[in-house]
Length: 462
Image 1 (cartoon, rainbow, N blue to C red):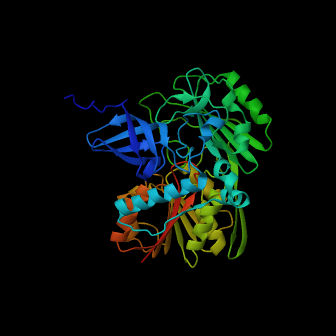
Image 2: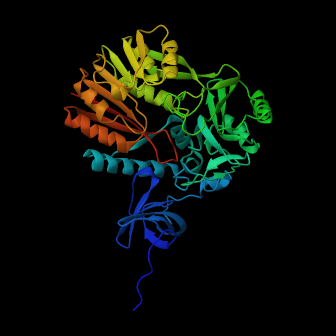
Image 3: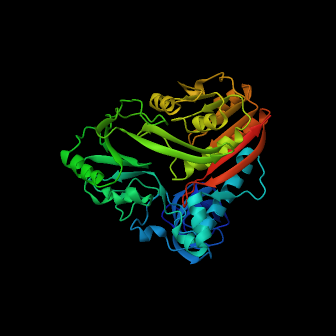
């Protein structure tokens, strides 16, 4: 009697997907293992290729759909001439259903990692997608949520061809359309140029302004042809555009990056043309009326990515901080939440952030407010400044044990936690609950349409 063939990476298997879990994976089971599979929808039966096999679990990618979900649509990446591009985990799913899948995954993570049970948890579309769905639900299921990124990165291959990283790979795929980008970034056409010597390109679109940051490989000079070609494209766009260069440092040298998330290992930015900054506009309705405020920040500084995200999240933070006497904003970046809440409620605000460049921008953006911004490594603080309400928007890795311990030891009676990762939020939420806080509310917002990610705004009280 012959034994069953060994299950190894590269094997083809048939899977039935049971449910949606984090990072865009569907969960299936095969040969006694849990299998995390990409490109499939719960309820589907697919033929998949195993990409990694361990003792009790495996990873796979869908190669053929044997029994399709009614929520499956043609992979949008094909229309963009970007087949296989990564970071678009739900490219094959109707947009409303992709939100349901994200809500299922988030609820599972909140329960498993945080012991937080949710009933009927849902994820709300951003205004742009909500309006499209209200106008034509059938068309919006496949066309909405495809042009929202105001910030995007293009990788550049060794021959100088820009493109997107392939899913689960460092390979660079040329693209006909920049996936998910707002129209102005695709219209630049940098993905159609040959730009030898570059490692990657950062594109930013803001209110009547924009920026391009050219990253060269370590030891590679920036070619005049590349500067001229990109400058020509920027000159054709309306508004104020700035062009910058960042050279990678040789291996072993470390430095502080300019972005508010403190990326190291790069030299300082060099401004080739323009101001080196962009202006983002915040416009929202508060209980006190219309709030319009412009924010200046370095071209590579952190800002919310979805065209609607800053207003959606600031509106939630302003509402959640009503009645505060003093507000503390941790991981404050260029001051979005602190300035919005300070202006709306006319109360003192304090912001802390690890990047000096972001704090310099926040101080300028807070003109006319009772605000104080300081450079601080949040995770190193053992005592937080006095405040009755604390807002925090940590990076994807979450706040972590040291920060949650400081929150518990603080004077704050309310915490407004903005998160872009349900898993790390669930871990931090468990620590806050164990430390005496109660979770009053957790809301999800689809500010990364067609990707595996969402944004969450939660309120803790004690």
